[in-house]
Amino acid sequence: MFASAAEIRVATFNVSMEAENYVGDDEQKSEQVLIERLRAGDEAQIQAIARIIQLQRPDVILLTEFDYIENPKKGVEAFLQNYLAVSQQGAEPIHYGHYFYDQVNTGQPSPYDLNRDGEQSGTGADAWGYGVYPGQYGMLLLSRFPIEEEQIRTFRHFKWKDMPDHKVTLQADGSPWYSPEAWAQFPLSSKSHWDIPLQVGDKTVHVLASHPTPPVFDGPENRNGKRNHDEIRFWNDYISRGQGDYIYDDQGRSGALPDDTRFLIMGDLNSSPVEGDSIRSAIVHLLENRVVQGDITPVSRGAAEHTLDNPHAAAHTASWRARVDYVIPSAHGLEVMDSGVFWPAIDEADYELVASRSASSDHRLVWLQIKLK
Image 1 (tube, rainbow, N blue to C red):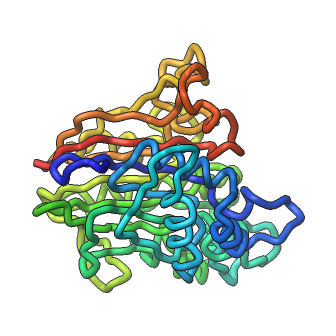
Image 2: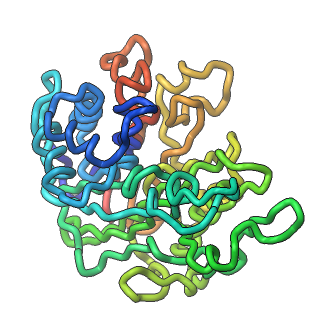
């Protein structure tokens, strides 16, 4: 059973459902790889993902690293029908009546040598967001509540240069890392930023979804670390009075989120406030923003057990030992009743679902139980 409209469970989960998770290094990678596995309905890793979702039963869930497939019948709907609507090892099937799924910047070819390796490959690190084919590492929002379609805002094409006081990436000699032509077109978002309003009973809750680039896989210029910082900072500006006036969306509208709005910032933000290689100020400022409940920290026994003698371990959400996945609720209109991370300890049921990356994902599902006020 789902929760009532007054109290709902929301979650985010990096599901590692992209081609590199299913084929070897020498095999061709494209969205077709996921299509074939969604059609078959018998891919063990996707069955494990579906079982976790069936066990946790979120009313709203953001899935990251779910490849974008242009034909929804081969993508989202195949996942819904062939995995979520089918009992996984006795778990109750789960059904979502609404979803949002859109193209992302990952794998979108650019005509520039963005990583300055002397080649213009158009893919990988020369794509507008790292990816070897368009749509890799996409996002999918599933909801049992209706989506206010006409009010959706996406920011995939917002230019990084248009963020005031953005981080600047320089070469060793102090000159700009990106050429003027590339910088003029460079999107801030490595995947996309979405503002998806949901109608929950007689109230509206905005899901603010994103998956910033990992702040690594670059060099001393720290181009990915700086982009990660500003992708997170985007939400901080968007929810803060007077800070997001510069923002424009793909629909041609300008401005930030109105005051006194219920919202949830969700996704794999690839940054921890206390560990790792990111420029931590962005996630710290976001969690300390007065309009969010940043002191809510979901934890699990499994994470604490995975990394002993680390005071932050219980809050980790990835097997590589960091808190990077978030559901951050607004201070306005939402009361957090409970929270957690699906990471069973070795002596708990369903530990096998997280025993290795190949079992499900190298990330864990993070959830909040919230009451709408």
